[in-house]
Image (cartoon, rainbow, N blue to C red; front, side):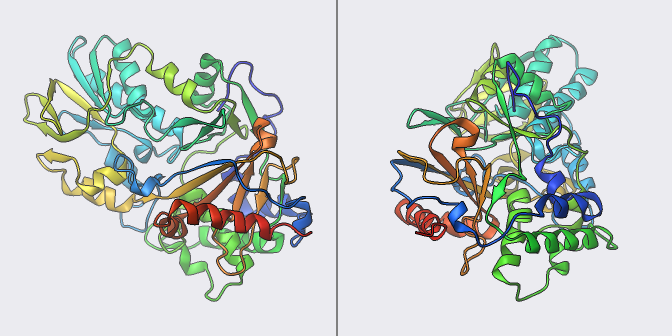
Length: 452
């Protein structure tokens, strides 16, 4: 997440994961001291108005995503699931955020996985051969650029009518907003930082500690829970829920949702304990992109041969070549292919493989389900909330996981917008609601945070 010029002050910031999973339970508890619960007057300063525009996501119902990003479920494979999923099979090489052991569920993890997949083909094939890339998200674009640079003939096929995959920037009342990924996580040494700079995109540091609402005691208790869980035996096969006591208070339920649901897109009973320590350390803090991810996507896609609206139905590896067939019967043949389909799509079977995916890959997919984090962007005429905070927390006494956290678009982008989140099971429930019900529910949450 960034650009030219790069926003200052990011070096001392922390990433979301560092705050949530600070070693020894120090980072979270120290950062939350002083956040006093039960002060709604500091959260919503005036009576909430009706949004003039809004947009919601429903990634679980998107046929080309079927979820937001992968998480590590309890299994015998553990973290090896990602390397097993990434292993080449014949002339097929697999890439995507789910195959990244160093940075799963991130845009830079996806980008790096594509570059890594390209290296496999470059080492095995002859320059000048034709290679197909399935998917024009960050993994696919990263693979295609590396292959083109190495002299291969590359065609990228993409089911959507745009490049970017789950990275999608649109306009809301003239403001660019991201429907998919919004942050660059850990900007120091992050390849996405360099892409943002090349694209001329400016970044703004995001401070997770600059928040209001919530309950500091519940968050500190959640941090203690995570610290205990990380010391447990058999962390790959045991769910985190083993360390979550039943009959939790609304405050405790909210803290788990904010820390686990919004980080992994999963609930504690779905998440392996080992997921808490996945990936390399993210350094330099997190940042949001001024103008969204679209400039980065367009920079990476520039000069590539991308065929949009090309929905893959079948991928065939006959041992001599790879044949990729579309829903309309169109075909491309190449010496090799990079497959970057999201795990939700791979697991659904909507794309047929011949020969079928082997058992180890199916086991890896079962160990790497697609989590869910959905967004609701609201645009207003006026800023009626605290304009100086990055995050607004909300504890619904009836459903503590509903609208548990909001991002203040005014502080980040200077726009009168709020971004609300729902994750995991709550998000799957909300996905079935009508648009009117979703917006009314969000408005009810905002009204609950205001004290006249």
